[in-house]
Length: 399
Image 1 (cartoon, helix red, strand yellow):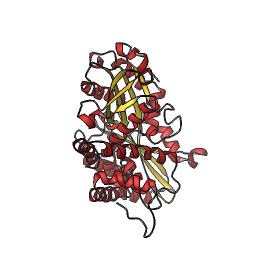
Image 2 (tube, one colour; image 1 turned 30 degrees about the horizontal axis):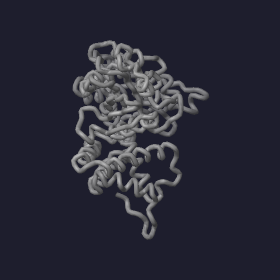
Image 3 (cartoon, helix red, strand yellow; image 1 turned 90 degrees about the vertical axis):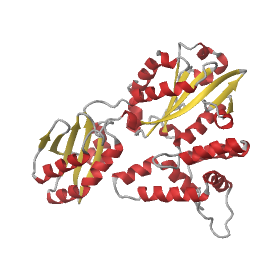
Image 4 (cartoon, one colour; image 1 turned 60 degrees about the vertical axis):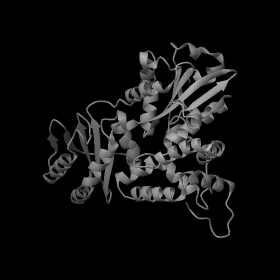
């Protein structure tokens, strides 16, 4: 953990953060931050992806520094409320239960994992408490299959908190896309220096981009050979490559990133090589649309098994690794709503009174339309009798 400046008194917020990081253990936290720091420092798509994947941990690290709270905004203050919840919870839990909390923290500081699932749990608890419910962390305190037990006016509901990565519904996996681009970036820079101008290399991948289904190294060699041989197109069953001039004019040229996203859509994977005003854009899309909403519902079917069925049951689902454009698209096109409502008519949803969905846009307090104003989307199951309990409506009613 970071050291305070000599002679400087730690602020209450710094003491709070130190208490939270202490739950992981100072050495473990420091090693983890060194590991994340090495990944995030890479000047590549992989480095940028690591920064985004571990934004929460990097933010906690920055806030815990001597001057970290200077200029802290609403999002940082909101995250501190969840930190405070975790520290308070640790102090209240008996030793065995406290170990469960520590295990949750340590699992989020290992490998590709992060602390988002834990903060999702803390945030869901805070949302229900703000709606007038008494909240118990029964999963941590008693080892129950569900995470929370909320009560109001004598009525109770079990809450299961689950996190799913948008990668589970994508056909072009972001990790494999980063590996593809980073592997050929030196060749792209060399080619662009010899071919001044603006270009776009469109890649249509009928079966998507997954290292277990598509030979990424072979695709890299095809791209490099295509550029070297000055070919405009290279077609095969697993990938269609096409090189065209890129025309950006006026306002588009002033904001190329936003213009490219608008041009290729929210599901496209984009990468840009620059050289002295010249530009080569790589744009990849699968042959079919992502099914993030379907992947979320598959996870809901499994998570519902953690509900007892004797009380009202709520699934609080966090969709991680989402871009703003993807999250807005799922909501504005009603894709998520339609898929979830269909799922609620199935036998797998018989224990579920309501489903809530949120993303990092809500956790980090982004403004509408990127985030849902109410803090989550919620869909009530009309076929579940407990979903009409008046005392539970603030937690069950559709938003």
